[in-house]
Structures are given as structure tokens and as C-alpha cells.
Length: 66
Picture 1 (spheres, helix red, strand yellow):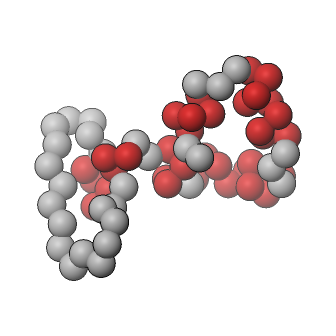
Picture 2 (picture 1 turned 180 degrees about the vertical axis):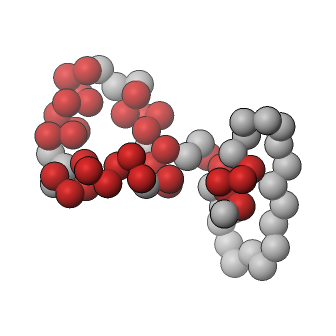
């Protein structure tokens, strides 16, 4: 489950989701790139040795390649 799915939920559902998480997980959420990343910013599935990141400004190339 990522930030996009949570953002599309009702405020009540968001509050319920966050209230069910342990406090340490809630504190870590701002730092979990996998939670905030868009699907095109995540590594491709499979055992890839090399992959290319191609995108314009703001596409997340730097973070995806880090």
C-alpha cells in the first residue's frame, strides 16, 4: 500500500489506517521511499543487473537511481 492509495481514501479511512500502525512505523513513513514512490520510480521486477531510467524533470530519476 502506498501514499497514492492512502491519499485517495476518505479522511476517516486515512485516520483508521494510521491509528492501526505502530508509532515507530508512523514516525518512519516520511523516510520510506517505497511508500511515497510512484510505480515508475521503483526498480523493475526480476533479477536485473542493469536498467535504464529515462524521464524528464521531476520524474524521480536521481532518487530511483540512488
